[in-house]
Length: 86
Image (tube, rainbow, N blue to C red; front, top):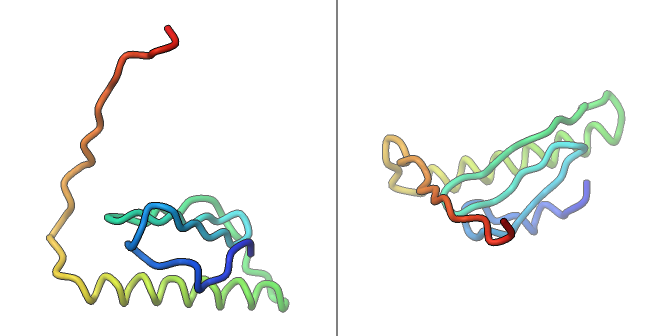
């Protein structure tokens, strides 16, 4: 665990990142990206990681439940620009 659970405010900024094992949760204002993996081992470290994930996911769900959500977000507006190094 490389970040404290209090440092992650779901959907509040574009900066918060929490790592649990090799699992990464990246905060955005319209989405949270989860990537990687974590082994929740049957030991104290596994319990601590499971508790952290439980807390983080609980706060994500609570944040979503407090919002007036659309059925689905539109796809992100991706723009292509010329390569300035070419």
